[in-house]
Length: 131
Image (cartoon, rainbow, N blue to C red; front, top):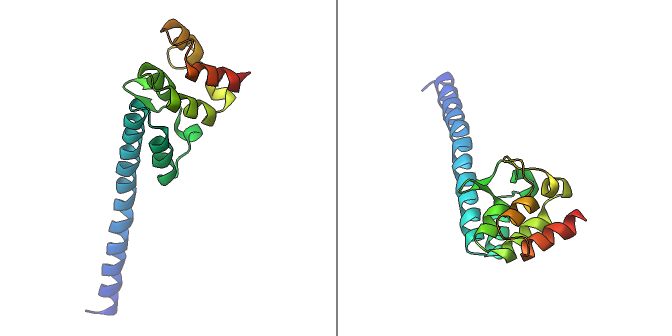
């Protein structure tokens, strides 16, 4: 093989590997987010924290637009009575995120009150962050 052919072959191999890396990373992130939902449902805050840490993800960065069963992560935690994990999530989010209306126009605390979760430890953690 000539030097030019070798160079082109190496360049093609590098290009193919660069194209396949983002797809693999996207699948990995999707798997991590699915795991976060599963661990939240199990009220396993240490596994939620570990999954996010291993993937180098911060809850503040992914919370908007991230849903489990069509609900925000905090609503999902309250719906599953995963209050230990809910408290952990609330402590990791900014006041702005915690007090902002979600896609249905209700804040997290308004939704919690309307759905019988107003007295939960998760709501208490949210209120302490907001106030």
